[in-house]
Each structure stands twice: as structure tokens, then as C-alpha cells.
Length: 391
Image (cartoon, rainbow, N blue to C red; front, side, top):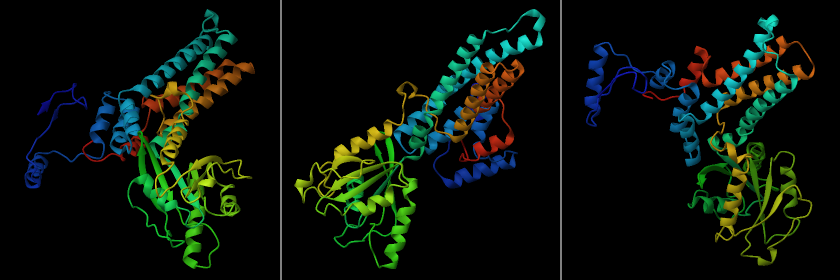
């Protein structure tokens, strides 16, 4: 199939060969093409050619790889939006606003006798403030975007035999972790992913934390402790049938390192009287989850709370289609935001406009780097090396 440029994906003349699914036929065709002078495509070469030929910008090029690597429907939708240019349009608009502000100031510097570009102080502050607000709104989506890309990380924590593995199995809908009545059955960290309403969660089951003379169990507990900073949320399971003091020691190990803790009372089927129990001295943790990991009671409420916790990371829902999930994008936006804030300070401090222009130029350079208007081969090499061959 022949596709003539500039209307092809790469903007070049492209020919596709369609064969029956025979490895032998494909191998013979490739040999014929190579003998005629063709060379194998490098990783991401077709997308890179599309970028270099101006068919897509760098954000859209990266979105192709994000589509391939997406591990949840939410991540897939966001990558699709970036490929369609949603984030690119916003970045381009911000770049235009910076360019116009810079042109006004530089006109006054280049032609002082013409009385050009003399923006009033209030006008400058309003303009810089609007740009800063738009950049800040994008930067604040980064934490949510990282969760969408990598998954919201949840650590299952508690004393031995409180039902951590049973909860993992119930959430996954399969017997992933071994469950027995023997305390300390789980030794290694068990990590599994689950999609809930389009959001990807990564659950990690850990060894029970408590007193032990067993050398292997001590190693397992140490690994569990080292995992605490990794988690966005720790589900601290408490046995509803255990004594009131039983939860405190393991809880105190969490508090110096955990980002967020929820106390989940398990085995409520064995002790219904524990329903509504409030754990004193645990005010930093969210409470009120009562479940039976064995029978599934309270599991739907816990899942909905997890989904709500994930989605609440997106503070401004009006930016739901412009989520920053890429660390390179974040770096460019953070640098642009810092430069605009410095430009604002130069106005407040009544510094020479040459300094204001310098800061605006730094912000504009960062935005141009974001969309790929200015870049270098090293950055391109790192970006397209992530691609598989043929994309």
C-alpha cells in the first residue's frame, strides 16, 4: 500500500507491505528489501520522522509511546488526549502569551525614542499573573498524573494473621497470596495491580509485623518497613477479634514514614460488636472501615473510598483533559513557572526591564522545549529510545 507524502503519518512517501502470517515470508521480504538498499527502522523512527517533519510536536510524539505503555483505561484516555493535541494547544497558547509580553518589553528596550512597549506596571503584573496561574494549574496535576501513569500505590500493613493476604485476594478476585491460619505465612512482598473504574492501583502485601525469633520472619518484617515510603496510602489492618492494645505497636512503626494511613478493621464477622470502634491516639489516620476480607463485607465501600482518594488528587477538575504525566513535561513547566515568578518580582522591585525580559525569555525557552520547538539530539535520543521498533 503506497501512501504519498505529505499526507502520510511521517509526512514522507511510505509503502506498506501486507503479508500472510508466515515468518518465512516476512524474513524473505526483509532480505530482499535490505539487498535493495533499505535499512531497518530504529526504535521510534517513524514517530521521530513525523516530529521532525512537523506532523506532530514532541508532546504528541511522546503520547504515542504512552499509548503503548498505558496500563489502565484512564492512562489510555489521557495519552489519547495528548496525541490529539490537548496539552500541546495549552502549552502553545502560554508560549504565545509569553512571546507577546516579551515582544512588548523588548520593543521598548530597542526603540526607546519611539515610546513603544511601555506597559503599565499593573498591566504587566496582571499579564504575568494570568500566565503564572495557567502554569501553576498544569504543575498541580503532576501528582495525579504520576498516579495515573504508574498506579496509586497501596501498602497492606498489620500484625501477623490479621487478613492482609485475604484482603489482597478478595480485591483481586483470585487466590494470589497463600492464606492459612498459621501466623506469618506471608514472607515475601507480593505486588499486584488492579483497575477500579479506570484507575490503576498497585497493592503490596507485606509480612506481619510483630515479635518474632525466626530469622526469616525478621528479614521479611524489615523489608515490609522499608516499603512504607513507597506507598501513597497504607491500609493498616486491625483484627476486630483482638484486644484493644494489639494494634498500637505496629501503628507506631508507620507514623514516621507513611504519607497517609487508613485503619481498616477486619474480621468484623467474628466480632460484630467492634463495628464503629474508634482507635484512640490514631487521629492522624482515617478510620471507619469495617470489613470481612473472608466474606467480602464492606469491600465495596473500601473500593469506592480508594477511587475517591485517587481522583481527589486532581484538585481542579477543569484541567481533567490536560494532565501532566511525564517528568520531562513537569520539568519544563516548573522551570517556566519559576521564571515567570522571577519576572513578576523584577516588576515589584522596579528592576531594569532587561532583567524582566531575560526571565520571560527563560520561560519561553522552557515552553519551546516542552513542545519540541527547540530541542537537541540528546533529548530526542532519550525520548525515542523508549519506543519499540516499528513505531
